[in-house]
Length: 109
Image 1 (cartoon, rainbow, N blue to C red):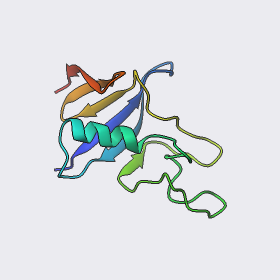
Image 2: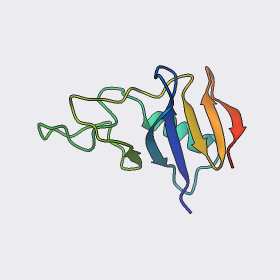
Image 3: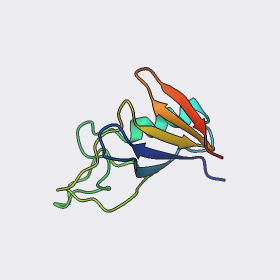
Image 4: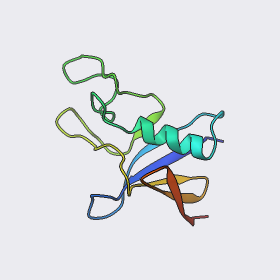
């Protein structure tokens, strides 16, 4: 069974938009998996969602092979960083990114 977190951007969008699935690995559970997914979907120095290489062939230092982008993106189109107010689905529970950590919103299963 995959240890997967679905990242849903809701804070600045017109409606919820699933942007990524993050494989957290078997060693992480609960808050560790949520924290891993949050960190993996941040634009620090480059764009996390464009894949391992930029269109010019340069390596993308933000690429994480544990992240599957939902939808097609390229260098000219980007997905913002996950922020306060966005949501993460994990093991049948929906969490909202809070100012400090994550808040359980609802059971989804």
